[in-house]
Amino acid sequence: MTAAERAAAEHGVSLIYAGIFTSNQGAVRFYSSAGFGPRGTLLSKEQGAPLNG
Figure 1 (cartoon, one colour):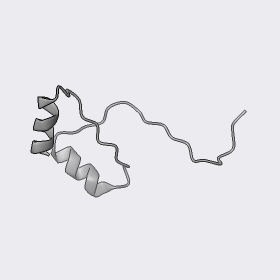
Figure 2 (cartoon, rainbow, N blue to C red):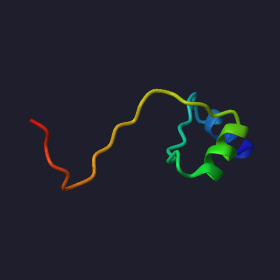
Figure 3 (cartoon, rainbow, N blue to C red):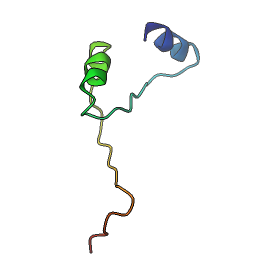
Protein backbone atom coordinates (compact mmCIF):
# COMPACT_ATOMS: atom_id res chain seq x y z
CA MET A 1 0.00 0.00 0.00
CA THR A 2 2.78 2.43 0.86
CA ALA A 3 4.39 2.08 -2.57
CA ALA A 4 1.03 2.45 -4.34
CA GLU A 5 0.17 5.54 -2.30
CA ARG A 6 3.59 7.05 -2.99
CA ALA A 7 3.27 6.40 -6.74
CA ALA A 8 -0.22 7.91 -6.75
CA ALA A 9 1.00 11.03 -4.95
CA GLU A 10 3.90 11.37 -7.41
CA HIS A 11 1.31 11.46 -10.21
CA GLY A 12 -0.83 14.10 -8.52
CA VAL A 13 -3.49 11.76 -7.15
CA SER A 14 -4.89 13.15 -3.92
CA LEU A 15 -7.68 10.66 -3.21
CA ILE A 16 -7.66 6.86 -3.50
CA TYR A 17 -10.81 4.76 -3.43
CA ALA A 18 -10.94 1.07 -2.52
CA GLY A 19 -14.06 -0.47 -4.04
CA ILE A 20 -14.78 -3.45 -1.81
CA PHE A 21 -17.91 -5.18 -0.57
CA THR A 22 -18.67 -4.94 3.14
CA SER A 23 -19.12 -8.72 3.22
CA ASN A 24 -15.40 -9.07 2.37
CA GLN A 25 -14.29 -8.62 5.97
CA GLY A 26 -10.64 -9.42 5.22
CA ALA A 27 -10.45 -6.56 2.72
CA VAL A 28 -12.37 -4.25 5.08
CA ARG A 29 -9.82 -4.96 7.84
CA PHE A 30 -6.88 -4.56 5.46
CA TYR A 31 -7.95 -1.21 4.01
CA SER A 32 -9.16 0.08 7.37
CA SER A 33 -5.75 -0.68 8.87
CA ALA A 34 -4.18 1.26 5.97
CA GLY A 35 -6.20 4.36 6.92
CA PHE A 36 -9.13 4.01 4.53
CA GLY A 37 -12.56 4.91 5.86
CA PRO A 38 -16.15 5.25 4.65
CA ARG A 39 -16.87 8.01 2.15
CA GLY A 40 -20.26 8.58 0.62
CA THR A 41 -22.72 5.97 -0.56
CA LEU A 42 -22.43 3.62 -3.49
CA LEU A 43 -25.73 2.31 -4.83
CA SER A 44 -26.06 -0.65 -7.16
CA LYS A 45 -28.78 -2.65 -8.84
CA GLU A 46 -28.81 -6.27 -9.96
CA GLN A 47 -29.61 -6.72 -13.65
CA GLY A 48 -33.10 -8.08 -14.17
CA ALA A 49 -34.45 -6.61 -10.92
CA PRO A 50 -38.03 -5.34 -11.26
CA LEU A 51 -38.51 -1.60 -11.62
CA ASN A 52 -40.42 0.18 -8.84
CA GLY A 53 -43.24 2.43 -9.94
